[in-house]
Length: 228
Image 1 (cartoon, helix red, strand yellow):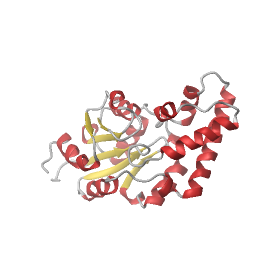
Image 2 (cartoon, helix red, strand yellow):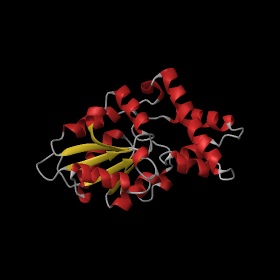
Image 3 (cartoon, one colour):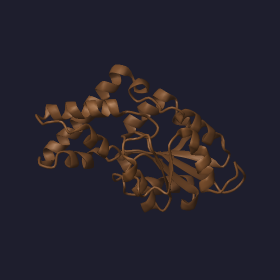
Image 4 (tube, helix red, strand yellow):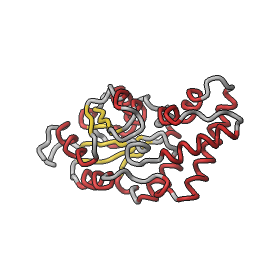
């Protein structure tokens, strides 16, 4: 890439960089069963991935009291940690094919910095980045502990402020409608990926789409009209 303004590429995590659906689905089943509830369907669970848990649980179980939603959140977190500990974060949340190379290629560009905006907790993100040795790649890391749930633009606006990057020089890469709506609300480009947890029809707010990590760097360059 050529000299110019600093650019920021922000990544969602679950369903975008890593495939963590096994532990997500397993933890949700355990949390619901512990409350004596019928676990939600797989597609319903994947449909809320990306939301903060305190927002997701009332969607999955709308007819129970708020106190039980809180217990579901705690139960899910405990179950997820247990499942992750059994196999290790790198095994339970493997990187999608091509993800590491795409991250490394973008990281090596002198005018590009990388960030994360995830519905994970700080503890969960730390475990994942440590397991895959990715921490050094991301200069800004936004998590659910300190922000309203997606699609509120708070995560992106904070990432822009931390890096000093202008909205027109940033892009959000994600697999869910929440990611793309968050990008739109923050005034940055949304780049939807096809391999994640939301069907393509839900990514209507995406300005751009890719079907493979091998396409990512080229599309990002096209977004900013930078020659390859």
